[in-house]
Amino acid sequence: MEIQLDIPVRFTDGALRKLEEIRSEASSETAPFLRVGVKGGGCSGLSYLLAFDQKTDRDNEYQINDLSVIIEKPHVMYVLGMEIDYEHGLNSRGFVFNNPNAKETCGCGESFSA
Image (cartoon, rainbow, N blue to C red):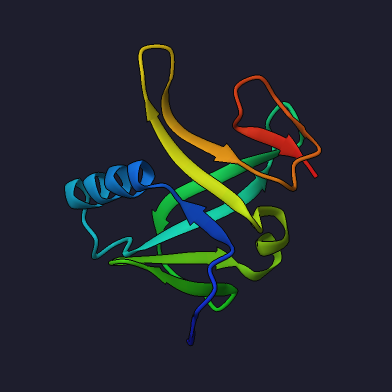
């Protein structure tokens, strides 16, 4: 499958560092690709998906530094222009999704409606 040049999402340096850390702790043989996407559920209708996974024929593949990212083709419209950050402060810790396509988000920031 062809690698796409223009990735529809952007990762901050903090998010990339955390993803590299997670990848180095896990077996990259069983899940060599970072999946970005959405799934039904959450308090606002859709939840974000960020996990290491296997690639399927429904995925577009993108390359960011040494990270191979996959996004299911139908999910691109939901994540287009999104920035993924990682916060590690006293009040919050974890990945943060800044999505310009979200019409409404929940208080935790992990689900949205489009």
